Length: 459
Image (cartoon, one colour):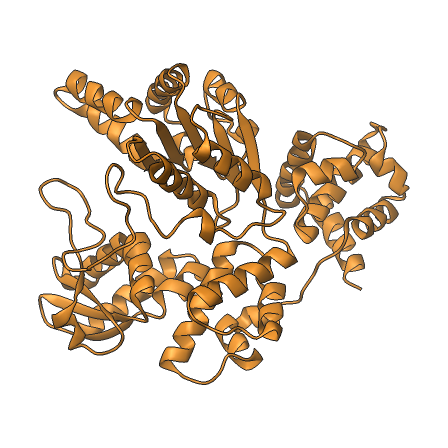
């Protein structure tokens, strides 16, 4: 079984993004087993709950392919195999119902909310969401939706990159509505599940009855929370069903909250009439956390885990890890695992050991003024040209390149980018960044220009 686990880990390493693998899979240890059971140790209960919830099915699949198909998988809190007999946390496999029980048979108290929506995670409450400039609008509107008796900001469309809190806010809205109005009918569902439900109903021999049941499930609610709506792209039949569900809820005055990895205007493979409905309410962007928010997240997550995080270490981590809140939380989990299994203290050496090669990554952060000056200088223009209304090709190209670099190196939000470049609309900034990202790949001249400007900034 130890060899099986080694093979499974090799597959998981290649199929999981590095941050998630290092934070959530690497700390798992093989502690025993037989031909029918694989026993794995995790640092603590919260770590176990997260792994089983977010990576359980992936682990099962990897172990099946490694040669132990059908074996039971037990998670043990700590590294004592004897604990498994007292409180195993088994990942159950799909049964006759086809449902995947992520929490197993003997986990005790877990993080799932009670009826009516067992899909909500009680750990993802508003009071555990760290607020800063990067997410203030999304957080504020999410709270307003949760506290409103009637549908407000409807729909609320939250978009942003992976790991910055979109899903957290969805769960927080549902939990808060259930707390304030215990009878509220709340349904949280990832878009992929909605797709599966619709496709299964359409393919069923009794498709009419199945579709009627699907419609009842998604329309007989007080709030519908759909995560990662971008996955509906290119799903024509599913989009049609979602369009009618959206209209039914909207007309009934029910809340609709959606998340996506991009703004509605960038959901190019959506039906226009559906995409236009996303603009009816409030569109709130969550951007990567700035320096102060990164520090706040690190200290909060350390405090939640009972760890004392020296400020010097927090500064070091915040300087190196800039992409998402999830990456920051992963670093705290890895620090804790390092202390549990290797020992020592939380200091800069420990932080460097946890980050690995990322610890030596250069820290590039340039203010927008510096980017504008360097870009204007490269193209033989004035900064005023980048902020003005000249439409010559050279000027518009330089302006878009400067927006792209400001976004890349200064974590500037799209609305702020538009303001800093002559009071332009945020959609102009979005389009500029997207087009330059495409040009960097396809056009050597643009790629060389971007590299040359970055080199100038790095001096």
